[in-house]
Length: 312
Image (cartoon, rainbow, N blue to C red; front, side, top):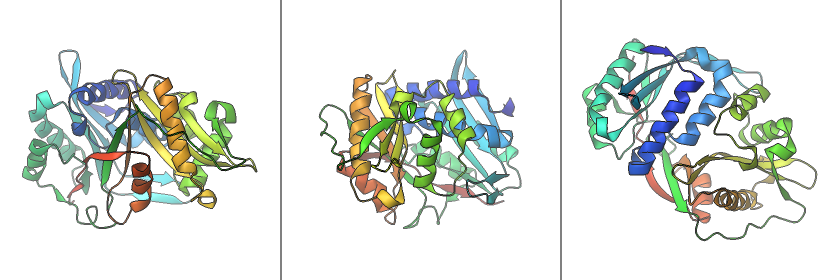
């Protein structure tokens, strides 16, 4: 059944992410990870939820596949500008024990987004799925796969041996619970620029069951500016923590704040029960900064996605 995506749906989808992570982490698609689902749903549902439709597939009581289509909409950004999105994007997941359901997911998306340009990000490790997308007319997106393309890679490391984080003199770690909502939102906007994020967005993020204020970390500069911020999403079932998002104020870059924040975050995640951490980043050669930062604290690539496109 196709319907608007609800908070209850997202919790079921997160449960599927946990079950797949336990057996084949490399088959968890972009935008289908435990933390990514909370972040994307939380920050966007109040403003964009009317353009989000979904279908769920069950085996008995267990969710085994889902599709979340984002249809054309206007997105108001933090600088007051409006971006019109004219195509359709699909986030999806299929449990590997039910791989054949990908054909039903594709048919549903094609029917839902009929007449629109369609994009999707299956994982490179899902060889069967990639064959099925190709059979339905989806082709690699040349722009998405270029030197400055939009494909992402997932990086991971264990938390057994962590360096001690070092901040420049006068800087200190804070949590969003300590700093307050306005400071947490401003830290994100300063790092990411004109994006669709607001106090309302943050309240949506904070209301998701997976959110923990003690794992929403900021770096405060001597002048009181929140110079960097990140949220960690703790998947207790798999003892893993996912960083999403990670950002530093442009005026405070190249000071080692991001590196220190990641190390501090991993230490806090370990204290909360995590043994493993993940973080995604753009993987194309033209986007080296975030990848270099994550590699500098011990992360390494585990899998990547393949942007596919089907013309209108």
